[in-house]
Image 1: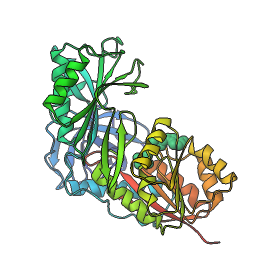
Image 2 (image 1 turned 180 degrees about the vertical axis):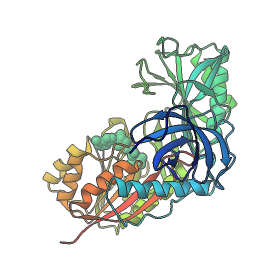
Image 3 (image 1 turned 135 degrees about the vertical axis):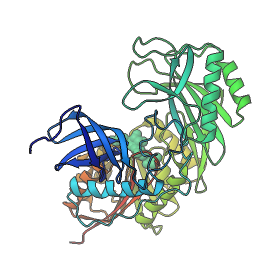
Image 4 (image 1 turned 60 degrees about the vertical axis):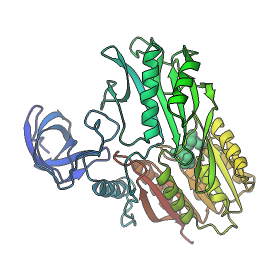
Length: 456
Ligand SMILES: C[S@@+](CC[C@H](N)C(=O)[O-])C[C@H]1O[C@@H](n2cnc3c(N)ncnc32)[C@H](O)[C@@H]1O
């Protein structure tokens, strides 16, 4: 096909689709043009900035006709900040796009036609839903700035109040920034690998109103750390934990291996569905507590437990899903690769007086074959892998083990589709797919999928 556009050309496009990373899609003589910040229904004049064999990318020069789904973003930082991608679309439209994104990945990547994909389960109030933020720190006009990066750059947008964060996290950020300024804490410069303060990490437990603040530093100690912690805790009474994390590596990884307490305790406690969870600086915990209940509730419904089943919870993090299932199953084994998370999972079981769970540290693809060799045969598998999806060795083991049901929780439709395809070709059928909006206003979507074994 001849490429009908060139760099610098202004083109008029009717946007009819949206990509998985929230760029509008228009066509020029059948050739795809991706337009950041455009949504279906927009008619735009856009300037082409790059051309590849299969597609071009263009930036909006002006909007000729607005989509009926366009809205004013709820956050004043939205247009500068790269944290959210869909805030200019109504929430109902976002939920529609996310369902389409899942359907399209299942078809395109998984070759799965006719799968039931339900409407995305959204939030009644989609603002201020996040319980965790990692704000990068930099200098702007001689003052400490912290917030987020501009899209595709490391330029900092100084955030006064992030529209998707809990108010306690926003206030903690503002106070932490002011105190760093007051006590003249130096700021890390990533090009020179010099200076101290790199990130401000905040976590808030919605149910108990406890906040944690972690100063991520390129050093061992924070000058005036005790004073800073004392002032922080007196200005924001929800702060029960102030810590420093040492990260001396010149990389984009935010947290380093070592965390030290300055004041309070080294964890906060959150409650979910009557269960208590201990959250430390480094452990993974779902960022949207309201929707976590919805997500895990769906996973539990799909697991269809009667109290007699043995369950494997793979990629279990701090054991949240395992503990959520425990009261409904005979026995649950959680498997996770991070040792600290396994320790937290064990403590969480103890904290909730749950005695029918067991947690094993290791890679799921190594531990599961071992357990099966030892004679285990779980009735239900639950997997919740990172964005990369499941290791093929694990999928092969699961398929050969022939459980009745498999519940797949996924934060990446592309790897989900790849893995469902693999299992569909080995004796399992996708029963239904439920997208859940864990990350409103961003392009990300979570899914829970029920697969069952096809009877021979
Ligand atoms: C998306 S999180 C899910 C955590 C947990 N299920 C939850 O809902 O909080 C994925 C987890 O998988 C863990 N992980 C990554 N690779 C792994 C592997 N090969 N085997 C076991 N766990 C792994 C990560 O450390 C992380 O805790």
